[in-house]
Structure formats: C-alpha cells, structure tokens
Image (cartoon, rainbow, N blue to C red; front, side, top):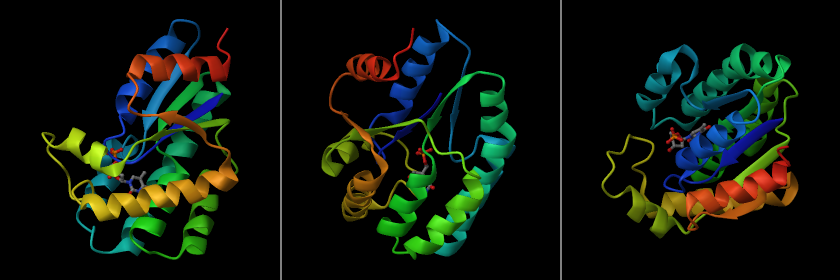
Length: 193
Ligand code: TMP
C-alpha cells in the first residue's frame, strides 16, 4: 500500500504523516518518507533552494529527487511488503511549479511520468486548508525560500490542487481538524487490519 499525503505548506502534513506511520507501524512494517530531500541527505533540496527564481530548474530538480526516491527507496520498501507513507509526491510539482510558478504543465507531467516510472499511489490524502489559515500556522516557523512565497502563491497552488483533484481521486481531509481525528479517518479509508 502506497499512501501519499499532499497539501499546501502549513496544512499539517508532517504531523499527520508521522502519526499515521506510527499507527500503521503498530500493525505492520511501514516506511515513512518525504519529498524533497530524503534521498542523498537533501542534496537536491539544497540545489533547489539556490534556484528558486528559475521554475524549470526547480521542477527538474524536484523530479530528479523523485526519480531517485522512487527507485532507491519507495519501490524497494514496497517490494519488501512494507506500507509506504510519503509526504508529497508528483502532484506537488504540478501544483507548485505548474499552477504556482506558471511552468508548462505538460512538461511537468512528462517529467513526472519518467520520475515515477509507473508508480502511482494507491491513496492520496489531501489536507485541505484556507491559505491564510495555513500561513498563520507557519507564522512562527522559520521559512525556507520556497515556503516564504506568500498568500497569492499559496492560493494559486491550492487552486491547482483543486483542479488536479478532479482527475486524480483525492480523498479530502479537513486540515483544521485535530491530527488524531484526521489519522483515524485515514486509517478507516486504508482498512488497516
Ligand atoms: P516541505 O515543506 O514539505 O518539506 O516542502 C518544501 C517546499 O517544497 C514546500 O514549499 C513545497 C515545495 N515543493 C515544490 O514546490 N515542488 C515539489 O515538487 C515538492 C515535492 C515540494
């Protein structure tokens, strides 16, 4: 079972994914991972941060990070029978670089296809939140170059996710609910025995 958690910055993805992986881990082997930066100790993440003014370079680096992540970490974990919980995946690049930064979406789709090599998630949980609430949550957090792009950017990204959701079958979760409640609902959806 390959589970992805998506959403805009400040939606609470990491908290939910950590709790979810801990709950799954009580019943079966689980691999909790994230994009970008789990592969190569964040090498690509660092390169991305140095190029935030260049959407093509950023998208290319995110998809290279993904290609290695899929091949070296996610597929091997699934092959061992582990469940995988991944924070962000292909749709993050489409939503952020396509809808947020205005890069050609067809180009991103092609790069994503190469990167994921046929591995689509079994379930994508989308943590939905109003961008102004998400930004309020991030107020005291130190933001990196990508996270500091402001309200209008996050609004475009959210609209992007909403459009992607029409074709992708997202399972919507209200991100303003307590993380424990969200995780309980996710566990019901994935039918963990
Ligand atoms: P994180 O906060 O989830 O670690 O992600 C770092 C930032 O990178 C966040 O602002 C979302 C952004 N991002 C993209 O712009 N495109 C992508 O493909 C991915 C995976 C993340």
